[in-house]
Image 1 (cartoon, helix red, strand yellow):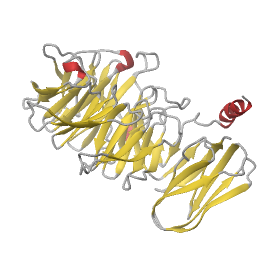
Image 2 (image 1 turned 180 degrees about the vertical axis):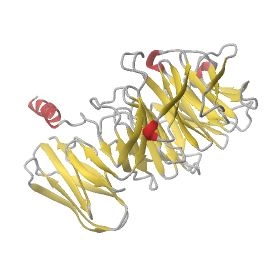
Image 3 (image 1 turned 90 degrees about the horizontal axis):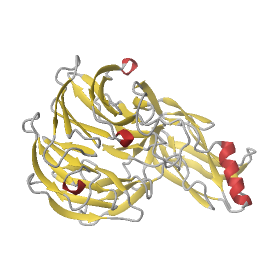
Length: 453
């Protein structure tokens, strides 16, 4: 009992996972106009996406009242270009994708697929119509590949996936479908559907070569699977899955042998407390919307040892696995800027790199150097500390106690550019808060950890 009380007091006193954290990222601009409604209270926003036309960049964000398009070409001056009203729903579910100069929006509140013409930007947006058909009025999510939309998690076909042909973008035509399992979300690459079956915990692979007849290829599950979404690298060799529940983490898989997935790594966020929502891959970078931990970016050039590049916490409250914080992230704007949507605080335009980093009480100057939160944390007696060096440096990593006394030296040598992991074994040390510090060239960073025995 005394140990439990001590641990609770340590968390409360030292503010573990209680504050917003920023590391090697900066906010370029934000918008938070829609705060008067939403169900439940405090839930105002949903997903976001991006769109580019005539050299201008746009952010699209769903909220309790509909969907708004913002011009974010100049993040210092974000401009509202118009809103399409949409049906409400619990948690304000709303997702969207673009094709040609059209925007397609779905909601669990109904109205089928809302079609919006974006060709009049930068002046305005024009609502075209709602598309429905017999038996179908709502979707949880929508995906796009080429001229085809893939609707998932709706009130049709057992909540499975079905295809809409956009040969005429204002008049979609329903094509094939697959409904053996409920599909929460899906990603499509080279006519393969990577379908996340969240409730049953399966990752399902489907062949959509024939758009009129989707074929089952194979599926797999894993311990504590609550498979929310999935994405792959361009070569389709690496797959990321996210567990909205269960592990609460993103997991990287080697699927180069399509008949046999190999689990490479499970990604623990810097706060060791929040739950992942969505994942996207761009080149060797992985972008996560990690609810109460905000946006987190990882270098996955070595997918067996992902290294955090930076993070920006959009949520000011206590970090936990509750459903609040960053809903979605979009990393594909040509400028390199990143769009994110937070359930409470709206739209963010972010950038990676060259900022002062703040994590609880520590400050650091970050220039692509990274020091990740130890895992596990709290721990007994072993934990691992990962870090990344963009250049060859003399590296020293030390551990100190609450009084500043050095208790261990973990690394003390010259290391080449790359990703590293240092193990800390706390034999002979008592329970409490400890700090680990990295010195590498001009880079200095300190983080805290808790030993429980």
